[in-house]
Amino acid sequence: MSCQHPRLASVIMNTSQTTATDVPGPDALDFWIGEWTVSWPGGHGTNTVRRILDGRVVEEVFESHDDDGEFLHGRSLSVRDSADGRWRQTWVDSTGSYLDFEAVEVDGRICFRRETEIGGLPVAQRMVWLDVTTDGFRWEWQHSRDGGATWQVTWPLDYRRVT
Image (cartoon, rainbow, N blue to C red; front, side, top):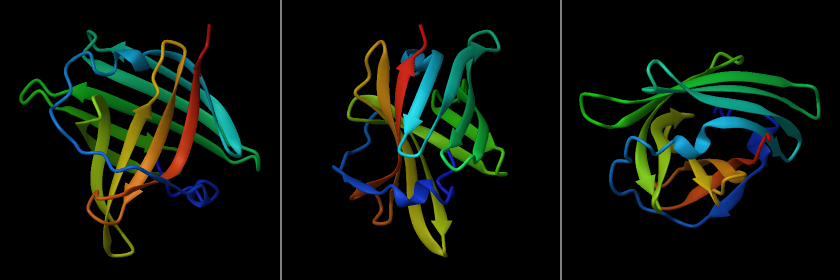
């Protein structure tokens, strides 16, 4: 998700350091499939996640608005590349953002990560799913300016499954 949204950039918290390990397996995103309501400080929305294209691609449809009436509509496609077995994700949204990620495993769970530059300086960005249960989880958009030694939360979302 784009962390360039001005309201969201002000929600910063420190998180503990984690390390990446092995490549996540083919069922790594199964917990995410479904209909969700999402909320965060200053906004809320919905997220619909389903398997498409013979079950090989995970499609996300994200619709949100914040308390100031700003809307963010986004889509992602995640696929486990048949050539090398690595998960990759592409995100696009109504602000014109295009982000590309590669999956790694962090603390036993899939995480999508990318390297970029902001203001001419290298920044690592990642999205992490935490405290996953059948009915909900916490999702965090995080960034690191020290090569991944420490991570800061830019956008925390609370997911609740729609029943």
